[in-house]
Amino acid sequence: MSEKKRCIGILTSGGDAPGMNAAIRAVTRTAIYNGFSVKGIYRGYKGLIDNDIIDFKTQNVSNIIQMGGTILKTARCKEFTTPEGRKLAYEQMQRHGIDALVAIGGDGTLTGARVFATEFNFPIIGIPGTIDNDLYGTDRTIGYDTALNTIMECVDKIRDTATSHERLFFIEVMGRDAGFLALNGAIAAGAEAAIIPEISTEVDQLEELINNGFRKSKNSSIVLVAESPHTGGAMHLAERVKAEYPKYDVRVSILGHLQRGGSPTAEDRILASRMGEAAISALLDDQRNVMIGIRNNEIVYVPFSKAIKFDKPINRDLLNTLKTLSI
Ligand code: ATP
Image (cartoon, rainbow, N blue to C red; front, side, top):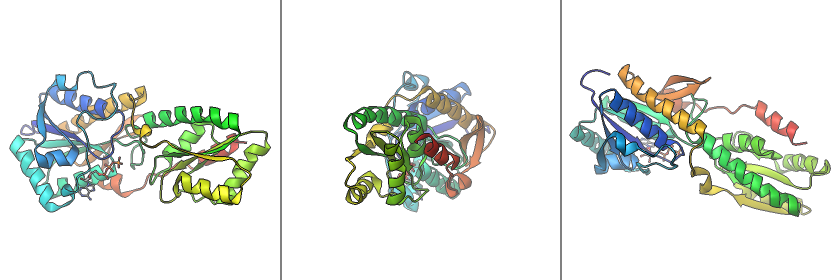
């Protein structure tokens, strides 16, 4: 990082994800370790526009590595999607002497960062923080592992009642555009099937899958459904199955915001710590407009243009794994 870049702003934006605090801590401490000052920007791009900005010292990030959510809060900000809003944000950055920004969030956050960086020729480093794991160029996003573990624990509990009552459960998990949580959650919890946005599943195919399980002496079945317009959601699927196959005792459970909360797993804390440190290393190397990623356990730098533009594919082999193991 060149001599004049001395103050780094940090914000979290979009949906919160467990591990964001560990990333805030790592960015802040690595920046201070390298002699920079840090400004904490509250409520994402909204706080930037509203001047919700404070000095961050090492003690601001003490005792937060184990906390879910984000101490910087998060918000969606429509104003930032307009040139006028972004100009206001730029003026606030200038006023505070911020000369590089680290933005932690999902696809929308990085899209906003890219637009802003291009418009004002401003150095920004992105850190992927989203439970959906749906950003291209990185094997993992911060929060995904914790959410996956939460889903697994919830499904384990639902299994107890599903088995006792011999019921078919549709459990809805997050994943608007990506089935990582549903598919891997289903494998981790030993579910019978996963309905994900990437693959269209007809009700008769589903019946075959479930019947397969029931016939082989299982007395209950669990199907994980990604909450997405492409799948129609768990409620919708359950209604269709109920209408066509009244013999099943069908129930629905929607995990909802539970999936966002909780203390981050060791995996998410370590990922966030590595990514936070890498964000400052990237600025020191004069990199800009890249998202920090991890591939094969190595830190990589992914241009915003790629991270945003491409869809991250699911590993289709996992569908076979799930099918094979659910007989
Ligand atoms: P999650 O994956 O959890 O939903 P996200 O980062 O994708 O997180 P969004 O609400 O989509 O969450 O985006 C966060 C913020 O980024 C928006 O509220 C908006 O301020 C900004 N943003 C999104 N898209 C754009 C855009 N095209 N131009 C400028 N800013 C944008």
